[in-house]
Amino acid sequence: MELSLAISDTLDTFDIQILRELRQNGRISIQDLSERIGLSATPAARRLRHLEDRGIVTGYCALIDEVKLGYEVSVFVSVQLDKQIDVTLDQFEAAIQAFPEVVDCWLMTGNRDYLLRVATTGLAAFETFLTGKLTKVPGVANIESSIPLRRVKSGVARTP
Image 1 (spheres, rainbow, N blue to C red):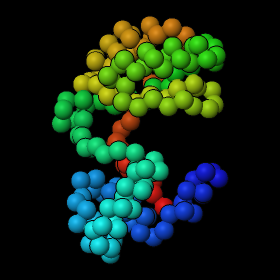
Image 2 (image 1 turned 90 degrees about the horizontal axis):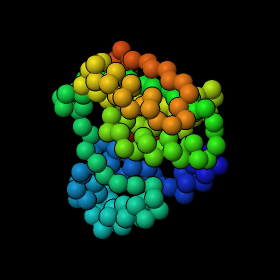
Image 3 (image 1 turned 90 degrees about the vertical axis):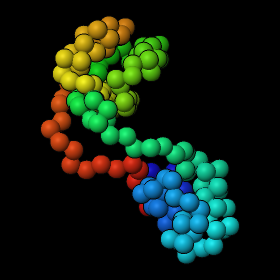
């Protein structure tokens, strides 16, 4: 928490406005950005570059509707490993990197080691992924799946 406070303490209102505008539209032009935050284009561009250099803005991407691409089912999968040692964690994480079905993977605290979000074309495809790939990863001891009914809130990132 101290790190986030230190970063947010060094951001002024213009920086925060830039972050909020980018969160809404990562393709905004410098000219439009500068008009929205009340600075001329050169200082707005300089501030944005500074936010990038500091690692606060880490990149730009398109938000993609997975359902329109045919990935209609998302499943949250909790994974417990048989051992929480570096080698087992590394092996699991390397295996997950190779699975396109895994959209997000988080190392967790609590009684599960990882939380995954898996996107597939349907339950049959999820079953194939589960039985054909995930259960075969060395070190996996227990898997629990939850199917979300609907998304209540969606965000890209939290900003001050």
